[in-house]
Image 1: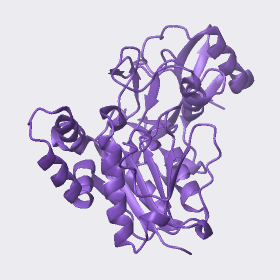
Image 2: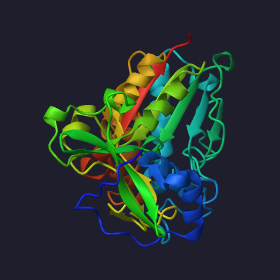
Image 3: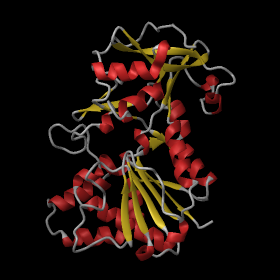
Image 4: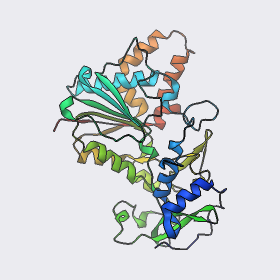
Length: 355
């Protein structure tokens, strides 16, 4: 049972959500009228009726009406870099790209990292497939050959549990619907038998009021994928931090909202109409891969990943572009430059050998 305690510093009530969202929330919350934050985030993003990612609308891209852009918004060069780096890593693992299935997870409808490549210069893989939202996440079994399991900003879109340190205890946070308005709700102190005790930062090192957004669903998704009977290469582009950084360097948490290319901290406004995201915990994802058959996962900045594993392709691309201001060269620099995407994003990659 949740606590009715409302902190004095609570954010003012947000604009009321749509009647459809209120109805979906009330159905999910039941008589208590309260959802744990990760349940609210799952509803706001993925509910078949009112979820943000279920809406038939533009989300990704630089055009008016979109909310954010990703590396795929820069055109085919991102897919070319991914294909080149994947080829290098497959060869290093003794695997043949020509016998490999490239599996992309979570691409937008009609999109895909390889779908925009020049048909005259196709990627070197035997086949490619895309598992989108709503598809069953079943990967090709080992007997069909190796595969590349690829995602771009998939794990940061998984629901997170929210906690705040208050009065010498961790309190879990939820969301309440009162009089047609959503409010942050204190669910009370985390009990000693709560599973959250296994992953919360130590109280003695955490200041009063610290917020900790725990990306447990992302770790569970990584484990779900890794434990399946496939072998090959796992590559996930995302943004995240180590557990020590999440536990000490993000006092307001990492959950953020995006609406019409503006980032803000009001997570409860426009539910179902804005994107919600949070940093992944790289330690938890690498542990999930290691536990389920990928012995040596590695995290690199996006810049380092492409330079280390697609260096010859980058050199050839730069040599081919004689103009310093060509769109292709600008896109490449945007992906690699430390002040752009090069350091903002990281890449988790691992080889999963055949069992």
